[in-house]
Amino acid sequence: MVPGASPKAKGGAALAAGDAPPEGGNAARVRRRSWATRITFVLLGVLATAFFLYLLVPLVALLVHAPPQKIWDEMGEPDVQQALVLSFVTTTISTVLAVIFGLPAAIVLSHGNFRGRRLLETLATIPTVLPPTVAGLALLLAYGRTGLVGKHLTAFGISIPFTTTAVVMAQLFVAAPFFVNTARSGLDQLQERYETAAYTLRASPLQAFRHVVLPLVSPALLTAVGLAWARALGEFGATITFAGNLPGVTQTLPITVYIASQRDLDKAIAVSVILLAVSFGVLLTLGVLRSLLAKRWSL
Amino acid sequence: MKRLGALLLTVVAAVALAACGGDGGGGSSSSGSTGSSGSPSKLTIFAAASLTDPFTTIGKQYEAANPGVKVTFNFAGSNTLVTQIGQGAPADAFASADTQNMDKLTSQSLVDSPTTFTKNTVTVIIPAANPGKIENLEDLANDGVKIAAGAEDVPIGTYTQEILANMAKSSGYGSSYQAAVKGNIVSQETSVSGIVQKVELGEVDAGYVYVSDALAAGDKVKSIAIPETYNVVADYPIAVVKESKNQAGANSFIKYVLSADGQKTLSKYGFLPVE
Image 1 (cartoon, rainbow over the protein chains, first blue to last red):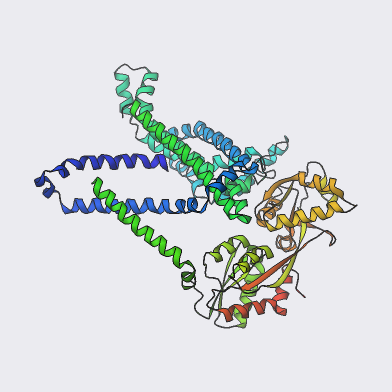
Image 2 (cartoon, chains in turn green, red; image 1 turned 45 degrees about the vertical axis):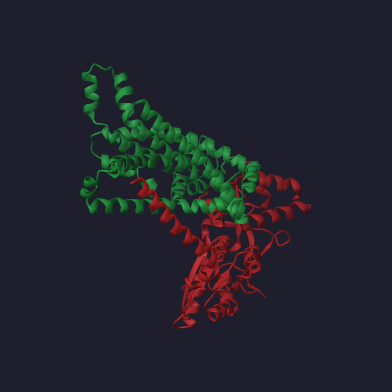
């Protein structure tokens, strides 16, 4: 959510900056500002603040409950390190796959003009609605060893469940729709006339892509990458159902948290904080990258 | 606007903090008042997920025997229920799938002294189609067999490890058997339902579950019994929750579970009666 939230924050800052001059001293203009506007701003502030607090308080509660020493100790535990590495590797692969396959899908959905597009649109959203365990069950029924597709793979000696591949597949299934839908709304803003204008100005296709298309869509794409990656990292239900839980092979960080919560709640909370710290770091990096790109392309 | 925003933030933060402080101070006192267990005609029972079938039936029987009483269940993992009761969830009685979880509540004096109301043992289940060609317990050690077991911190996982340790000590199986079976475990499941599901779907060749789960799975699975010498007995304790507003009702329900009728229903679902 961090990359997604940042443009709104920027918008808010711009709004505030625009308000600054009247507050500076022009009394007549201040009076002219209607009460309706003031109330709108107050309401906006109150609701937004309440929203951010609503998100923040549970996270703070986790932090308050986890003593730093415990977090440090857990970082040294082999099972936590193993899960951290596995989570990092699998989410990176599933996010890259989400981009490789999701970007063409988003382009087709955004610019394609054909029958059944709405149907594909819905299909690309459905996995976000499915309870994750149902998604995992669906994957088992499809790619399990007695599954629809899986039984044919068995003939070649390929068995997907309970492997690291299954972890990546579960993450991809659940997280890729977040990439496709976010990327798609970014691509929707790309109007053909901008590209045409570039060509009119004798830009080569590569130049048009680099200087027109990329600057316009890259913020949305980075947000999409962040969302998909974050969803993949937090994935639990589909993974435990489709890939199971075997330390070092399929036990990702959220599963470590769940297993720990069965006996040692303090450990579960400490590992959760590690999970949060990792996600915060990656999402913040993506956010910074986005504003750097925006600056470079002076948007 | 910036100053206004800051002010707003401060005010809302202060209010929120005050609310948090209030919560922290009065946590234990407020827990009972939110309960739906105030009325004597209403009973809320928190029970381990494995008790879903027998307790649903017992609930109906109890309602029939006590007109006007409405029994509501909250079925979940014993551990989750312990956390919920610890946080002041409105429960009148708690039935756990193991003594360890019940002990967590007794040590905090959140429940009255528990009574064992039923027992369960462990069995091996295989898919009806038997893809792993498992005919006996020895076959579980064969190369390439896929086994689903409970994770070590989940009760069924703990029991499975105990059984394997018992078998390792015997001359018939030995420690090489224990090592081979452990090596065949492809997934350490977080719940019994996860194990049953993977066996039913034929994704694994075998799984360790409770006898009651094997019975509930019907003809989709076959059982291979674990001899009493190696098997463990899981005690299921039940207790009245101290914060309950309906102690009499909770006690009466527990009495019904322990009665001949209650025990008969439990054994119908594969649970062992208590003597």
